[in-house]
Image 1 (tube, one colour):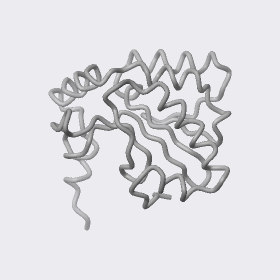
Image 2 (cartoon, one colour):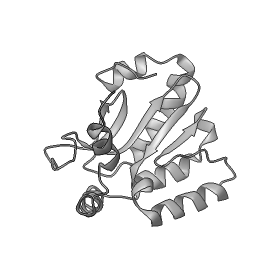
Image 3 (tube, helix red, strand yellow):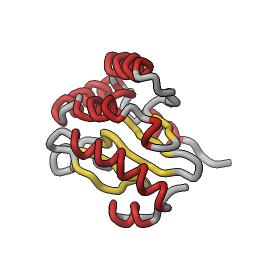
Image 4 (spheres, one colour):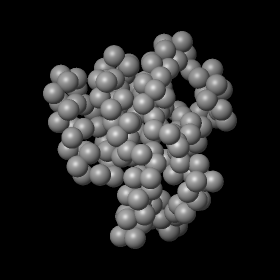
Length: 163
């Protein structure tokens, strides 16, 4: 379920008390470990941690470059970790560390699904968030853009026509 909130406070207010407690717990870990230069906002119906357009505006979609995001859904929550998705070394490090934590990893390309905050190795989440500076993330993004990988899915969807 996509939220209609425009601010983080509005987003949290739309959640049930249990959802709010879980999202707040993960959000606190993100905020404590977020490198300087990223900002918290609501984008695409979820809490996002982005590089402001004033700092870096050369994105494929004209939106602030998303580094991480947090969303509550009807039956689960999702943490999006773009530095894990975008860097094979970080992905390998993350999956090995996650497995060693003893917690069950339910992961898509950039997303980690969880039912409650206690299902996540929160110390690893904090380390993962702290791992990539704004400058390093911009550098990675620019290399991906040059290779044609940045925004590939969005561009593909934009090019599809409905029957």
